[in-house]
Image (cartoon, rainbow, N blue to C red; front, side, top):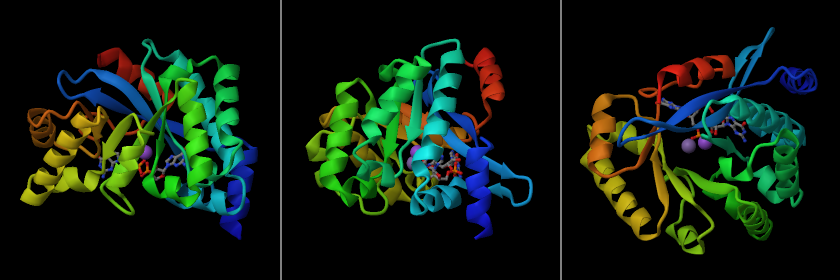
Length: 250
Ligand code: G
Ligand code: G
Ligand code: NA
Ligand code: MN
């Protein structure tokens, strides 16, 4: 298809960029790290969402090439940041089915010179379940090297609490569906409270995603949520804008 051909060309010509969105401490608004988010603005097709081209790349077998380029760019940007902030990077489900993923991730870090302790990988529950044994091996190898693992979009899709018993995660990201409904819907607030209590018991760090308003940040802070991410703190921005952001935000 036209989209597939354009994506192939974009990967070869290095036309897919990485943007960065801040993740902050809710206690004091300090920036703790950034999530890398792929951005592709094609001259003919215009802006194509990663929600479209990541699954296409997986389906067509070029997710490795795409992801390696993106991780390299993201890691290089992280090295230019003025402080040792963490870099959070999304792994797709196809990568968790490929036994080569852990060594390829660690090889990129070594080549770029980014300490594995500064990397976090965001994965979804569905991705872990799709090929459980391989996924567990990859996660164990990466964690042994110091990379941390976040459970993304928690509370949606195929989530099962049983997964948390396996202690393969360092952090849980509460899906923005709960945050955006928190002010209008009591159920969402109760769910967030329960997730926070559970994560405290399991010694999991928690990030609330999709914070767009001060009232949401304030409520989450009052509930004891440690970290937040969302347009209220900063939208995804390219590496130059991210450096400028860091000059004005601590
Ligand atoms: O930022 P945005 O709404 O455009 O992202 C849409 C989806 O694409 C999200 O689910 C996000 O996790 C995913 N995504 C963004 N960048 C990457 C990437 O570099 N790799 C993978 N696997 N997924 C990504
Ligand atoms: O699946 P994942 O959680 O990685 O995807 C995060 C997506 O949410 C990205 O596409 C990102 O651009 C988007 N996002 C980040 N912050 C906000 C926000 O405050 N509001 C909305 N609507 N989307 C957000
Ligand atoms: Na993510
Ligand atoms: Mn998410």
